[in-house]
Length: 426
Image (cartoon, rainbow, N blue to C red; front, top):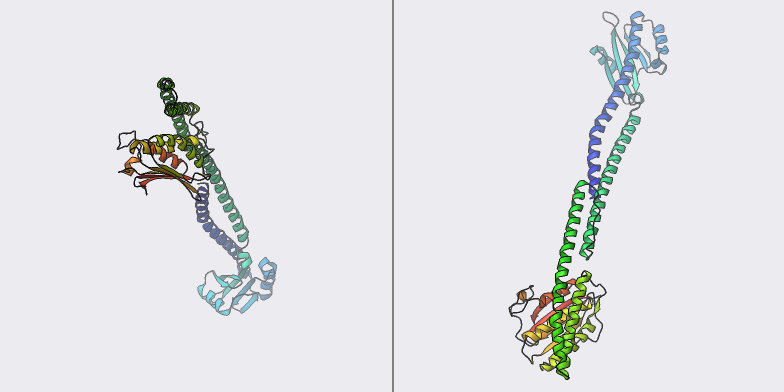
């Protein structure tokens, strides 16, 4: 924007300056030319007065030498009766004859200047021509200097307009950058981001609107966090009752698994309340996808063994750092594995694979179930064809997109659904 304003100001003022300077330069040149010819006319007029008094050659030469033009050998007198030329002439015989026929003042252009010819009738048949020669130096005297002055004025005007446009553009650019910085901070989750209300009036209005929008968003998100925290807190009562009931189950692998599941659920609820109260600040520390896969399969493998589900895991023996918090990655993996256990029969085989690439880590969960009939509908938030909430695949999709990756659903080699969670590698 700043550069565009400067270029527009430069182009506009340059055209205006040229529109005035070119005619002015011509006027200055013509003025110098006319001034030089006026001086030559005065010199010639002085000689015509002398010719009215005398036509003696000696007196004419004496008068010519006494004038400034004559002293510079730029003044001459041509007499027809008696015929003769006195002084320094710069014209040819043809030029003289033409001037005698015109009988009016005229000029003759020469390579080194202009000759001004003033005719004077000295008798009934006699005509005297007074010649005053003006060299080019006199015709253009002061023109170059005046042109330089005009050029300097034009450059000053253009520079001044460019400077003013640059300052105006700088104010606009500064206000724009401040607005962009505020938007960037809000996009990164800083709900306290505000912009200074200054600059051109239009940008002040934009700044006020941005600050009002940011304040509104802060209030809305704060209210949403409170609702999430309150709803999560309301789960504590049934969880407490469930935990007490689990303690009455006694000992054994099944009871231990139930108690562990209830305790894990309680931890998840506490984590939700903690995140909601803290302002939902993003965790940029990242996580090791391989470690998360190994940790979560410890939980799901117990349920798989109970349901006699064969399962395999591949690629989890190598580190796979991704720019996603451990809790978000675990929630996405739990959503995918939960779908396997919820929508396939007991005994159905499933597999979890980590595919390592140069810039991506693909977390693949596949099963040998019936598959997903409409994969496009399945990834839409709240849409489900199986009577569920329709949030599982959407949670996984948002987790992948948060890293700059994506989620793909198709049919895998096991014959059932295959969900690929493509995550950008740290």
